[in-house]
Length: 516
Image 1 (cartoon, rainbow, N blue to C red):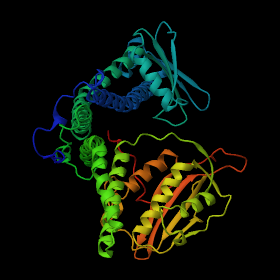
Image 2: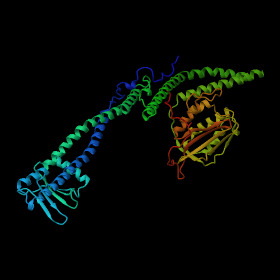
Image 3: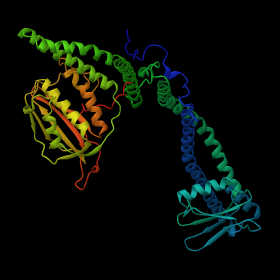
Image 4: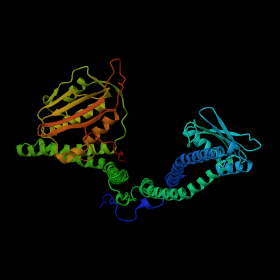
């Protein structure tokens, strides 16, 4: 006895999402050259360093400005102290002491009145670098602070600043660069001593969170995809409950959808394998079964010629049963041997094609078909294949009990460059349980003797022509199918530009793998 599809639950056995990914078919390596965790680590370190730098540079510029402002303040105070000396004369030792306490080499006060008071050293010094705090910008201060960190110690700074002591007075100071450099180095060491541990803890926390919330789930999803591709029939689907502890997020949704897709794919693979086995079996026994049914059909035809009316009726019933059985075997054999058809795409007059289908002997009752398609309405299609599709829909409607079938070009909006043919009947409608699976093989509407292959073949034939078949609606008032095909340009037989037509939710699904 054939077994059902493999157990698709994700809870049993070892989850291959946690295992090392195998080498994919073809021999190429599936493990990335640079793991996502390494990239996340580098990104985290880079972001933290950039953040620290954005904090460090303004702080360094502020420390430099504070040091220079302090020099201007103390220099002004030293100059005022010297100005209080009798006669304004300061002996050299006092002058040097005042300059040492101010941390400067020379001070010049520029009064608003134009007077100048100087407290300078001997011999006069030549400055090598000029700084004017009155016009300095924020970004300029950051640039000069970085330059001061690497400046030579022997440089002399010439500083101009507004006096913090007396408004309107401009203080000119000559100061050694090594003092400023020493202050900036002390600030940098203090900043790094505090910032680096904080940055390391922050980076570790962010990296751990990213590893737990992003890298690990993505690694599990990647490993599951690779393992499933290598062996879809034996690899269990991803267990979304083990993927992340944050339900409802994007990773959780991706895991659930991947697990659902893997389960559906395994079921489809199992179903296609069964179809392939069924096709092989039908191909082997189809010829022999027809040979078995042929004598039965001959015997039934002889019974139809019997003089007894009851025997003749039995013979007619037997003939119909044998013919139905033969047709069923033929359809299944055709489906099993179905190969991509050789297409002859050309402009097809839909009015003539529908009229030909309505007059087909297969329907036995052409009066039920109301052809409302105007002659000259053209679409791009393979005429023979499209005729098969229309005949199949008409035959299904009549067999379901429809008394009237209307065929018309749909007036509803279609996608650019397409034309939609609407086939509506007044039959009893389709059962709800088959509507979502209508275009899959072996899904029947419950009618006696149906194989469930007609609509599946019709969907394949429409797709082969670049068209689409869809169920618009069904119910007690009847059923409506839509056949959408590329339209013909007014100038000739080329398809009009446009996207593929939009279809209802229960349009024909993508074609399954053809059974062997």
